[in-house]
Length: 444
Image (cartoon, rainbow, N blue to C red; front, side, top):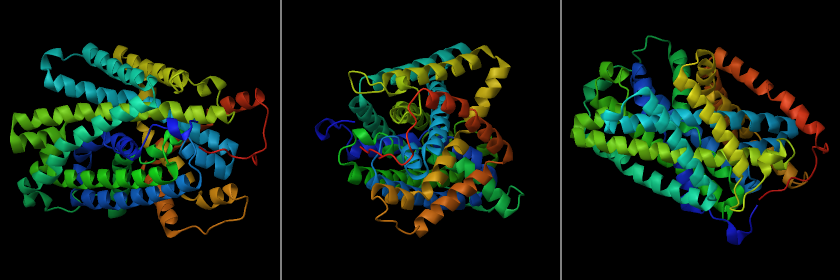
């Protein structure tokens, strides 16, 4: 995409993008969601962190083999061919722009908590739209600017969240951990129910692989930043959950709308609550920024391969896929407006799509978990076909168990969502010269 001299994302920026995309609304709302499951939730957090690290190692290996722009899409296409690659790009792209309003609403809610006088449905909708479009314009200024914003927002928010997760350990009440699984569900069923709740917080672990064309020394930078980012986020998740569950009684935590703020308030008063609200704003901005960056990169990579309409592949004078970002942002804006006016039919569709975000991301993870051998064979013309490693098998089982935990209905609707892309694929291939799937795959 760019010459080495113009590549603008280094180790610090890539790690910030990974952590920024992962540590978002799924993190600071999760303690309330997992509270009904007691100590089992902590065990599942640790197990899911191990699975996420295995996935991260798998993506790190793929990045060393072929540092291609597009991340999961690029590796799926390289390993399995054009059509599976298109389906992954289609579902991944939709899951990103459909999730932006959810992240932005969390940011607007934090602002309202700080300034109660602006409370109101219209105000929240306006703040949500302003947040989305501010971040869009930041990304339109170039990948380097987006990388700087990712670093500032990520490392700034880690201070208050880290304070809760580490210093808060001295405030916990051990009596809050007296029940292992108070949900009343069988252990396997309860664990499966926890899987998507915790996995939602790990979405974004592959973020550093997506803008590979803008990464300096991608063969080294992407693997290291991916694993480091996952380890930082996982540590924050486990310790943060332990502290919040240890500070707030379970009956109170289950009904909390802002568990980290409530826990900080219980420990340090109003000052603690304000600090966490500011951290939530920074966290949401960081997540919006990182996902907006990916929102343009994935369809751009697919368009360059002739699988998405060409306008998604056009690059602005600042080196960013501006049209793709703008189209995606407009679709996200429509969802916000639909929610604001209360059009129940479309609003239900919006809620469904957002609810499918975890499922839509886990499918690419499953495809990529076992892709290493096929990718190695492609990039070496069959000269090197390594065996599937234990790490890759664990990553695949991890992805499949999370998919199982999502339940039958989200998986069914997710399949329908993916199949709706088939007409787009057929239309696009009719208007482009069909290429054999064995064509050379260009990385970088």
